[in-house]
Image 1: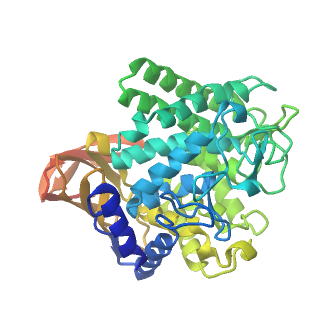
Image 2 (image 1 turned 30 degrees about the vertical axis):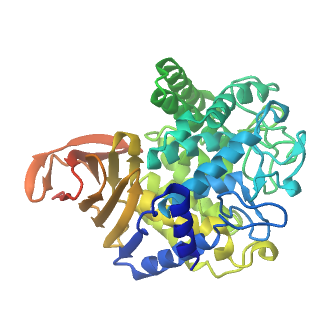
Image 3 (image 1 turned 180 degrees about the horizontal axis):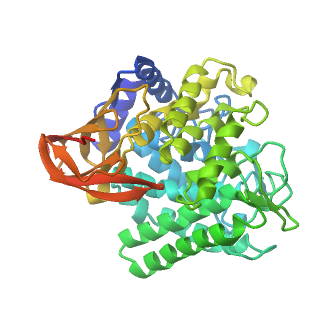
Length: 493
């Protein structure tokens, strides 16, 4: 019933009925059943069209504890892809703009940490412009996720809306300079006091060494620079595009030659207020380094650090107690082709949905935490299926990350811009893509792990190319499909 109401709302809002519901079928039936649950659960968190005690709700969905009528920036960032795949395009845009509009000079360009469903500040986390919850990585991750949403939707508002563009610009310029005072090095700092109401450098809120700069902060800043450069290019501003592409490259070099490796054989995950580097296990400020790809993917350090993350996650003393933190881990391992480990942690999440959440009084079971259902959907599409969209270029890249336990995965009605696409992976050696409908040609770049000299398109042998993806050589072939066409591509060892 709730989904029907939402579809009717979408019609009133846009004049068109939302795209057909995404459907996932698999040889691994537990995955299929879990995603059916996740779709229904995620849609139950949509509050668009409802009203609160004072005002009507803006188009939005729950992103945070279910007993708090608000959406949180960190949760929202992690839920956006899943929300898009469920058709919540207007909710994503409205929530993104609400965070952007909340940042101002008085807050030194921090966005609010939490926003009521009516668009006002959520007062539990906001007292005044000098006293509110704030975490450095969120400022930057909002910029990155806005660009990722543009890649999924092709919606020009993400790059042309003046409120959004002003926010991106302040985040990668003034925000950095205003929070780079104690140890000026071009990295945005937290207060170094470990107090979320004074500003912290990291997403890790567990008891730990207070950090003034953190691995997740610098990694998110790197992705924000990259995303801002790409959005500037889409606006036709080639000078700014080159400037921030250069800044992103310089920041990555700085991390891999100084900040990230100083006085350690591993990676530093932050710096203490006395400017001493801190390595070891820091949960988010450890795994965000790999997830945001600021480390050198071909370095032996990165391979060893992924081993270190796996070891810590297997330790009872080091594994995060909250399921929403664990929900990042599948993406980390799938990204680096460690598919069995990514699947292991995806299954862990799937099998602990009904267990009590670490903050059970606010949430109940793990499955009641909104991030879980939304992220499981994006795990299937972006991580297992390895889909990388670019709606503005009418391009989709695919690269199977199926583990041995999953023989086949079919995803129907993937919406990218105005296109409806279906895809089937058979292991890691065959992919079928159907371009169901759309207004222009679709460029499909089909990828396969390992190096092959040729591939087979609908049975015909054709040469392909190779390139490195997250440190691994993969084979690719691009072809153009018109609406209504499909193709099957496979490799033969």
